[in-house]
Length: 117
Length: 112
Image (cartoon, rainbow over all chains, first blue to last red; front, side, top):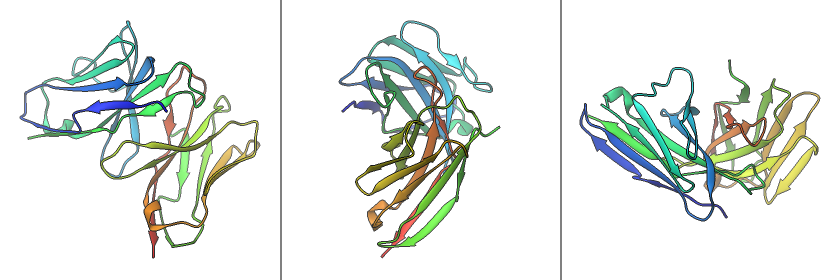
């Protein structure tokens, strides 16, 4: 089945630094990828939708200059948290959409636990 | 506005029991209804999904019941096991071009 690889699985960074999270579709081409954020014991909240070769669409309240999303190829999307602050600490999860998948192709990565100290 | 309402928030059942988790939606454009299982520190994994043209779907011990007129769907886990202890999310999507909308999740504990 479709596999989405997300790295790193966890990262600790200092306040003010930037962190990049990668999301790769391993055995399919992903025209669309979604980035979610999940706080402890809460649901997944959509941050943005990215389409290969075009700018990401951000949800209301998500700072596009803080959460930079790049989807330069059909197998890779990256989320960069710029000038990270402790309130950015969260669990970030990507989802890639397989163009040919029957289940609408929503395959999720294993998530990245970001801790900003 | 929450588009998919999920209940209960938490659930404790004994091994072998049949936990039932319910979801309700308002958007009649939704046409894809998956259930995801998530373990701590992991991404959600698809369990089972249904389209509105059927009222029930079974895959192994997991069953989705769908009531289109009531705009409700539910997950039943047969012969539940301690290994089923996890958080379960219902979700919905309006088309292949839109992201999933998630319910708030149900924390299931199956005790031996």
